[in-house]
Length: 385
Ligand SMILES: Cc1cc2nc3c(=O)[nH]c(=O)nc-3n(C[C@H](O)[C@H](O)[C@H](O)COP(=O)(O)OP(=O)(O)OC[C@H]3O[C@@H](n4cnc5c(N)ncnc54)[C@H](O)[C@@H]3O)c2cc1C
Image 1 (tube, rainbow, N blue to C red):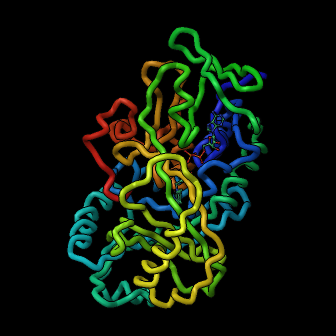
Image 2 (spheres, protein in one colour):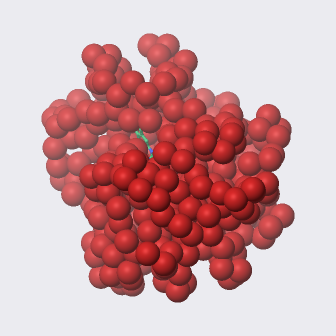
Image 3 (cartoon, helix red, strand yellow):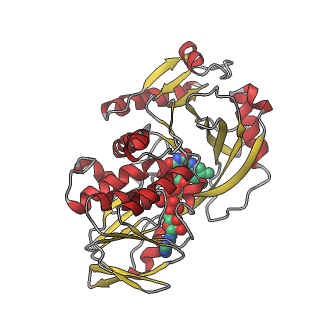
């Protein structure tokens, strides 16, 4: 088979990347060890899509992704569950007020539409929010929500229409190369040849690089989530509460109501739980239920449908690794997406397509340096991981 690019992994990042590469005229194959698209961490995501970050490069990729998600139905005809309504970071303490207000400057400078709402305005946008001790919050109105399940199948369907070949149930076990020039991949079923390989293997991205002795600092962390039965629509934005939980086991938590009316929710365990354990815990539901009711008391009556657990592919600074690996000609890394791979996937797909084809990049090179694999991972930290 004559191929220009092989993408490893049909996940949040790999599938839209394959689509955009093929739209740019390249012959693309995706190799995925699972039986279909989106079966890695993509299906664990709760579907929040935002450009509300603290790092300018993430804001830029996030804005590109939002443009793609919000116009997907018009451009490609498929419903991916897009729900407008924005993201709101709420503040009940002065420390969150000062952090969020401090970030507004850089967020606005890099093109994010975001405002600070005082208590009265926030309550009029989110009427059921607990008003006791509420100080205000941010609203980035162009953010939204999307179904990761509908989106990944639509990305794959559109990619197939464009001629991308998907090889499922097939695992990449080795990167083929001649000196430091990439010339394909070896899977458990055979060899495929091409001059460009994109490693979009998510939480396994560092394992895939072992055959060429390349170390990339990506380590999985376990996170749980859940979803309710559909409720009447009452909640416009996805809400993030940055406080640590009173029970001492959580830091921030976030939730929203998706386009079908279900409340979808998640928290960040404190301390973080490293590793690949995906068994649900007995403490998740009681802990998050208290936190949800604290912020929206009427959620006390919400019937929960199911819970699940997945992985955040973390980097030390909470910023993805994206771009060409300098020592290996033809190797691109698109991994370490942390808790934002679904929302950043399409934007990164466009960015990497531009880099591979010499098209117009989404980001200025000076800004995209933040994603370099050769950066100092201790010098910058994303404040809204
Ligand atoms: C509870 C929870 C909630 C989340 N909520 C959100 C959210 O609201 N918004 C958001 O943006 N993100 C969210 N995330 C994070 C998001 O799920 C991840 O960042 C994202 O899915 C990572 O995308 P990826 O493409 O890098 O990895 P994946 O989607 O996991 O794709 C990688 C693919 O590579 C395949 N693969 C790996 N190794 C090989 C190999 N050797 N050969 C072939 N195939 C291979 C895997 O099977 C997998 O399908 C959440 C995560 C969790 C756990």
